[in-house]
Image (cartoon, rainbow over all chains, first blue to last red; front, side, top):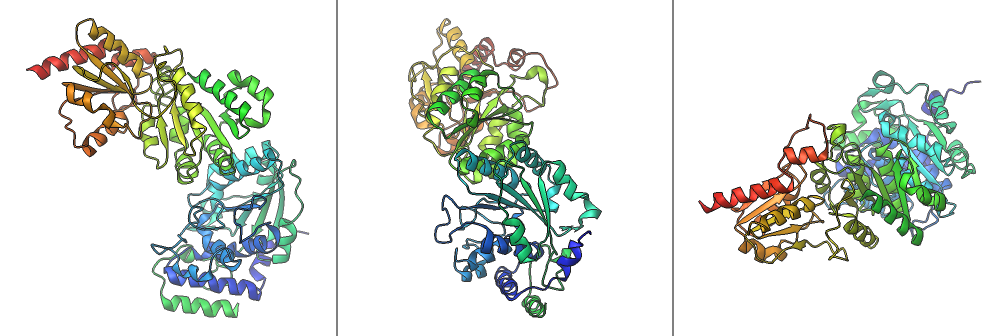
Length: 280
Length: 310
């Protein structure tokens, strides 16, 4: 039986923790008066599942050698990552309110040099996978057991460099590498099928030599089960296609290109969003 | 020069497991033995320059020292964003070994001639840009690179160059002097053009004209103060480079002259033109066509000295 992940992702209710994290996202959005809201919310449960239950990491020692590496290749989804990192204690949650301000460590895209917990600076799309391939190769060469996870956007798959990285990950059989596709089926200016269709996405990754799994990208238990599966470091790299909803949890922002990136956000808009997340 | 560079990387890799070689569909060639002996430090990847730069950045972020080699135009043009962000922004010790600097690949046309590579790479914050003059200097540079955490761009010549830097046994980033502290004319150059400038110096010496040649293997900082007495004494200063007129050695000289409040009245330029050449032939053909051979450099100096006298 075919599972309708799109419907499941749309219908699943958010638990208290997911709502609390969204409130923190709004703190940052309000502080900066701008931000990529939609992408941050589609990937929030993926990042939460990783940091809560999958990744080996230590907020008190962000450069722990044996940590798993996580690269947010779609750097514009950083409000989701910043929120989870702050919630885990990588930096005080109050710093979220300085988002995008001149002296803040939190810019509109994540930077390794400024913020603890950021593995690699991203923002220009299509870079993270090749870097992740290099990191996964490093763990193999060092005979270490840490894993590498790279989260890419579906729109980001427009970039040819992603597929260069995919070919090489497969060529080297980097089984300790997992690519997660935030498959919210929208990109900046519209739905992906109207701009550049990725279909058939699952068989595309299979054809590139990946072991592919699909998952409801807002279902924490499913995410933890699939992302936490043991890896075979000498086997096929993995691609996890996470079906998500852009703007998940805020009715007015869901599947909305207007909230992909928004500047000059008003207090009234923030108040309306806060009310929406409580009722979601 | 390329062969010496690759063999030096192999030597460095034998003694330091952090050193890895990354190429893109070059064939193992010179490095077959490295591939056999150190397979974990040798990566011959696909024709994917963007990928190999990002891949190397990932390795470097984890403590490795990748030496990437492929054709210079593909490293500098195609991979520019990866070079800028993955390497430059992260200030990672990735070394870009650029085959075919200048007009080496002239017969292959403008897609393969790296005539603006200095300009592109000097524009990347944190990137250190080098053009050694011969295989001897190349080896010294690569050995010195092991102690530096910054990214490097290193331009290769065609190979087979005479060894002219044998008096400089350690690479120290400083300009190299060929001639007296004071002379009638000074030639400022970089990379394999040093060979042609030294030829010009010889030709002029036979005519009683004294010339000192200064080679700048490191283009980010020319340490111009070291040339103060030369600049003060010479009535003619000529910059000679196998590069388009802007963004390379001459531009760096202008910056340093201006910062030091030195007059550029006597400073002239010889370079390639700012064009995508539609002529083929050999590198030598192009150097001759553009006045960058020893006899033509010498003739240019003579003519400028005469003009300056009037």
